[in-house]
Length: 399
Image (cartoon, rainbow, N blue to C red; front, top):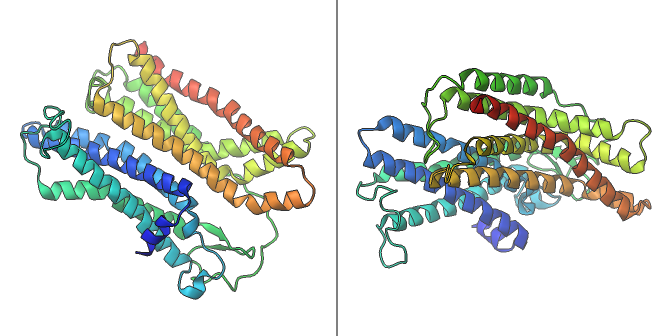
């Protein structure tokens, strides 16, 4: 009930982010139900049904990542001074954030169920009744237990991931307290801000580079084996399993290498006699490398996969099936929204620092210039990297 009341009183932008989470959950739920419908309508093809279900894992993971990012930026669940006096310490606020995430995802799952039944023709009296009956195998009955289990995957996964992510996040109170959620259920009695310490570089860059190189090598080695163990829903049915495994390793490697690359971008900005703007931009980028580097690496991996797929199938009249298109839109949209939400979280954490600089006489134009410089530096580094990964991934498949 408290989660619903907080949702009613939230800022419109906060409500929009929650609705986006619900929409992403609806999309994943629809894909899961489509996989279930195919399994019910084709009992003699269990392998194809399992593969369709496995392909839903990618948009599911992207949706969970987005839900966690939205939960981290929700102002109603951020620990503040005085809330523990009314029984809302960091631990209970974490539970509240998980419940709010579960509510949003459950709403999306219910919308997916209604849309699925409507397109199958199970719900009558509405426009487009049974418009996709053939695609969704309307003649086959749906087991109720399987429907409930599949629709619960997104809410349970997102709520659990949000609780784990918020349990150990560093938080700040209105009086300048810095703590870690889960260390103590009360933050009112903690001391003032400790002196700032230099940011340490992320340690995942070597492993990320190694995994990316391994993934590209597997793609090049396995691209000509002619196997098709994991066909995509739709017309993308000639992708070898080795290529898919290689792309997965490449995506994981880019996600691991992203924080290290962002940190190096910050160091690069401060090289060779930096001015105030470059020094500020580089320092902030180094401090935020872990927060935005991972989502940025995931976006890089997704965009490289989209570019490689277009290079392979872009000349065909319609290379993608409807379910593949829906999954691609979900993955691309959720990963991009996660990156933007992580950037918003970083901006929220910099609010007091920016206010202190303005009180000291720093011009607002300098802060805006530092922000633009950080964005331009990341674009200059990650855009060519995305293009290079896409070309290397598509080269063995087009040769």
